[in-house]
Image 1 (cartoon, helix red, strand yellow):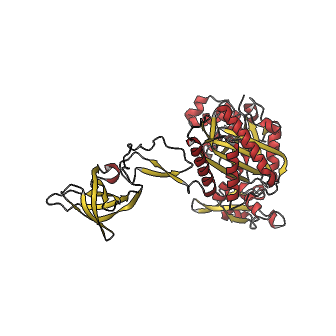
Image 2 (cartoon, rainbow, N blue to C red):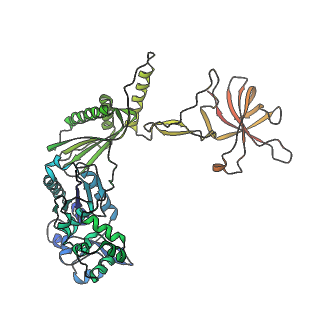
Image 3 (cartoon, rainbow, N blue to C red):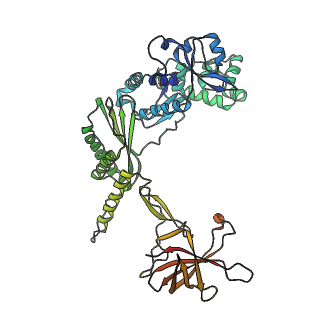
Length: 514
């Protein structure tokens, strides 16, 4: 199947954004005045965006504000906000996710959609491009669009041509009359080409590629091939395409929130059947709600293990809905609901053990999933072993929804006490200790104004510093597991050695055993 791309260009994106928010009036005498957005560029206040009225009067980007006011005293100038423009463009990209998961940003005012295999879901390419135009018109956005066989051809046709649908394989015939600026090259190269008498793509196409590369660089020849449809360039989508997608589109906006759970339940069941056929389960489930006014709301469900259990996932969805600080608002209704599974892993049907441990582990995993859904992934943590002998670095707190690391905890020796305590002090507490021999375990130590007589001791466990992290000045530590006369167990360590001419070693309490 030949690839097809839909290019969307919003020539007045910045001013349309201000008109939607009311900063530029939509009606009245003030609305007929030319409006421009300005910013400081090259040590001067220059125009960076114009509305349709300003363009009709001959104003362009890059013109200084002083020159523009000299031509049109009633010009209205507003401050540019590129961050807000980027946000609205990303919001439009999120909305276009309802048409295809492959959506890429194109410059500061455009989008490119890979619609290969998707157009028939919306009545063909004509139906899809018509639907996009109607939606953008309702949102108050000026749009020029085109469909072609390569992203560069579609963008050139939308920005510099008449737009529309380029039949497959006819990109060169359609685009040859366009100016060389359609190649999206720097202005200096455009001027150089014009001076050489090369003003259209037809003029360039008639010249040998080697000649163009030698005079203007290989980049010009590559852009020409891509724009004329001779070479394809795959787009880099803003969001990675999910492994599994199921969706529902409604002929009329759907505003009944009470029945919305039934739609989500059916999507979860359909995704579960698709995952079961692959022998997989999902780790992350993302539900997108697409409103008719262009707003998109996404809810993410995460599980600590691969899952395709429809009942468990529906419980997580209910927990997520109840925990929302901003309730799900249908507005004028939802046009579509989409369930994507971006992360999938192999999942086989578990065999329950006779002692019931598998059932207990599954119940604990379900509880963790519900806690993560209600409180957030960064508030429910678990510990994972790290490849380090340092007591503080030997474990790391990870989100309970994160995948389990390949390295697992070392199994303790049978009928042996734990080698490390569960409770550590950071920083370790200094103590006063007395040892029977210079490098032996303590026989008595004082901590928090209480003296502890050591009844049993085991050690030392010598831990050298990690010089690549701590440097060469960090001393070695000798750790001891000790038990006092009352049965309390402590984890002490000594830094330094008893040597003549050196400072006496110091003792620290690093942790308590249960």
